[in-house]
Length: 88
Picture 1 (cartoon, rainbow, N blue to C red):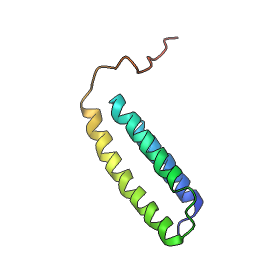
Picture 2: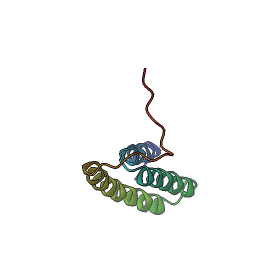
Picture 3: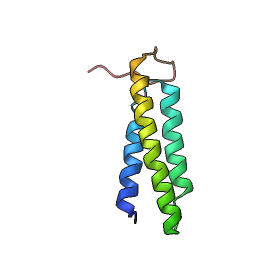
């Protein structure tokens, strides 16, 4: 049985991994997909469906972990749309 705390923790872990993409396009796409998937399944009440969605999320977390690791091996120039870090 999956409770709401576990789902929230998974959501935060997925977003955290999505933010680790070095490439802007991959990062924004991943963040949007995570957010949209959780928003789409927000009103699930069937225990079996919730468990299925949660298990898919765990699989996706492993996938994102692998992809972000690979992404960090290859650096790209920053795009114009990416905010620059402010110097203090």
